[in-house]
Length: 293
Image (cartoon, rainbow, N blue to C red; front, side, top):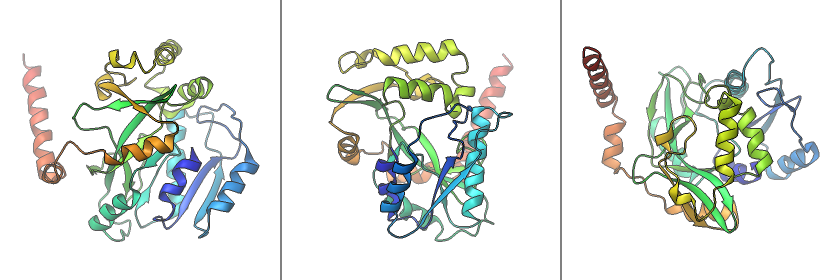
């Protein structure tokens, strides 16, 4: 996956840090197979501008759960990168459709943050890829609603729940193909049991097994009957869609025409802090009103 994701961001990055557990353990403390020779050779041949830092440390402390180890991993990488500038964290299974466009958004907000500014996140939108089927892929169709946004960049690194924190989130019309579930059976089962979300969203073994079995039976015919598929917040993934393609790179190319279901003006309104505060106030007033009845 790194071979797909790294080249997409390399040219428009100043420094790239690859964080690798020195013991080759997952955040849940489970060992994983890793081809060290292939990894270092790939980095050597890719890093033509010598901008890549390989940071190895113990990212799987036994006294922390998988979520806490994931947060700590991200924090330590941010410290290794140093203060100032825009800090972006892109996982290896995330493929930017137009990374330069996202960088242009950041530079328009601030050309070079010092790290002393009020913290803010800048988000991109996921296109979650759920499964590789016989001659294509199943991915999440947001049904002309706002897609799933994820904080990618921040001017002041703080990772409280993966890349999320209490900062204001600026939405963009940039997209990332997220190869989240489109893996082999064994690889997906390993992920479900070891990823950061496992300690909270799929905590019980029965939950993980049930979700995994549902995923196993998906194909290019029955996917249309699946609704509300997200394991933690079901309506977040309202339905699935099929796209023909032999490789993930072909799918990435086909997703280049993805359009944000909100106009540029609509995004500006949503990214206005005063509008966001007013909406938050209305939400709290509604909750308080309901609690009286």
